[in-house]
Image (cartoon, rainbow, N blue to C red; front, side, top):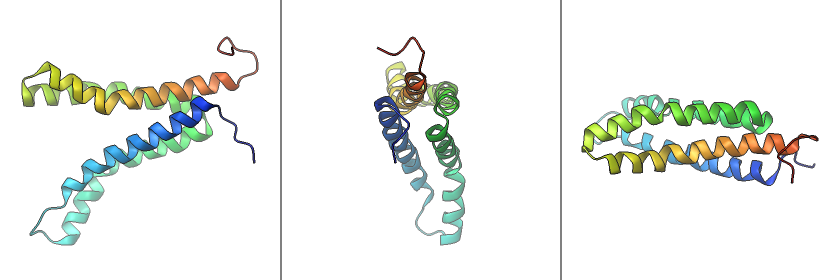
Length: 130
């Protein structure tokens, strides 16, 4: 079966899945010693909600690259503001706040942009074809 995507789409898929795994890793802090397992599991499930939303949009992006790509870019940009504010007020350092944004949000925006580019590369008559 031939895949209907470009190299940009393949790279976007890899980056978006890596972002999902990276963001999901932060949910592991829900587990604490001395608490009942079901309580830890409930907290873990709550922490995983943003990751599951991102995963659903990634799955959508695999089918409809333009729609999913736009949604991923919107998520990357809109979540940058509260993450920046949180880290700036926590550390009182612009450098640290920008580094966190570059680490968390920039790959998400890049993946979404690559999905959008891949969509337009697949169209027969477009300006992006080289």
